[in-house]
Amino acid sequence: MKIYPIETGNFKLDGGAMFGVVPKVIWQRTNPADENNLIDMALRCLLIEDGDRLILIDNGTGNKQSDKFFSYYYFFGDFTLDASLAKHGFHRDDITDVFLSHLHFDHCGGSIQWNKDRTGYEPAFKNAKYWSNKNHWKWAVEPNPREKASFLTENINPIQESGQLNFVDLPAGDFAKNTALDFDILFANGHTDKLMIPHIQYQEKTLVFVSDLLPTVGHIPLPYVMGYDTRPLLTMEEKDKFLNQAAENNYFLFLEHDASNELCTVKHTEKGVRLNQIYTFNEVFN
Image (tube, rainbow, N blue to C red):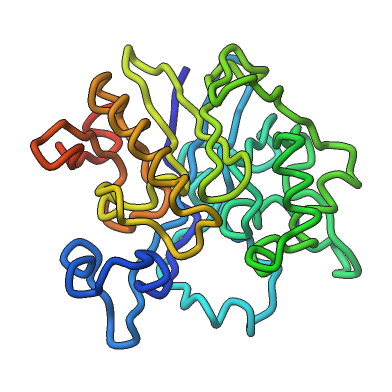
């Protein structure tokens, strides 16, 4: 097995929305804002090469939305999905599986692209199985008013229409072992219903793709919860349980949205679980 970070772009979001009730004077210490109160965000995905399978976890926003839509998010930098795949010797047609932690546009928008004459949409990974779960899929195709702007039908419906949609099995509890993709999955419900968090055994370490359970290192303290979360009190419970496990088991946390940091570990302190160390991916895995 080999694993590669895949950078698909950078964008900006409102810092207040990203930190909920936490005052700016506190959160800006770790996530400095610009003059418009916007903080830098990454769209960092993960590629797993395992035998004859090439599994992409999340895929960024894609590029099919309108200029008006993208203007809300202030995209910057030179990263693209295709360039990042090519850096490691791959093309999107090589992808065998696309695992979607959830269906918010910044995690699944790259799943679907315009067709050749821009009259409709088609899968961006024509040879891949797409993976979600039944509960989250239903949650996304019948969206609540709070999340409707994040669940874009053009990102979601064409996956099913293509016949490439697959569902992982839902566990009785919150953790599924021995899935079809050979990594374990933690299910969380505070950010959105049945968010999936892969736990990957790699080079005798546990690598966790934390998705939106922990967007940046600045979100490690329990009350630091996004305003985007549908059930913020549940997020706090889920973070508490997860971070304690991460500290006890020395998990390496892969940060999808932290523009400055790829990986971190956490530790127990008198104030609760806190940041231990920050790493680049290549410092830990080679």
